[in-house]
Image (cartoon, rainbow, N blue to C red; front, side):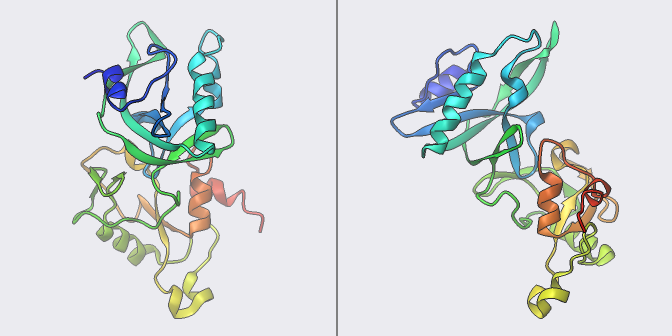
Length: 239
């Protein structure tokens, strides 16, 4: 089943099957975007960037205009879904993206825009607490809960906290000091190396690959199209 057949099997359509990036089923009020593997993080995927409005020849791309129309439908109440695509460069032009393969499956997503990028969040809250899953320190394998995510190892999280503690390494906030017993032990654990870049069998070091961050700093590190380093975020603190 090729991409067109897959989209049609869902009752969705588009203006042009060659250049369309997004699709719509008006009867079911559903908008569908393809999601590149190179544009996904552990909690969201990029579905549109403002810089995609023009191609490498500085020609306006009709797929971008249609994508904006479909995004406006999501704002109007349509549900957003994505399907995963494997990126490959065009053999004659690295500026052109080619779909090497794609997953014949839809995933419910939640639209959000930051600066010049539209994201499909995997959960209604884009920065949830870590989801426990595996038994070892091997991370990156994909599983299915209610949405696809990259596995987070609770033992690795525990080892990180045992070494670094539960104080945010960016702003210094400590939940127990502010909320007492109610906040004891609570902290987010941030993967310094984004999980989608490390491969399925990467053995993480909880001391050097993970760092405790409060939810605010965790959110700010992921804000925008580039994941910041902790030291970069520290320089932005207005304390």
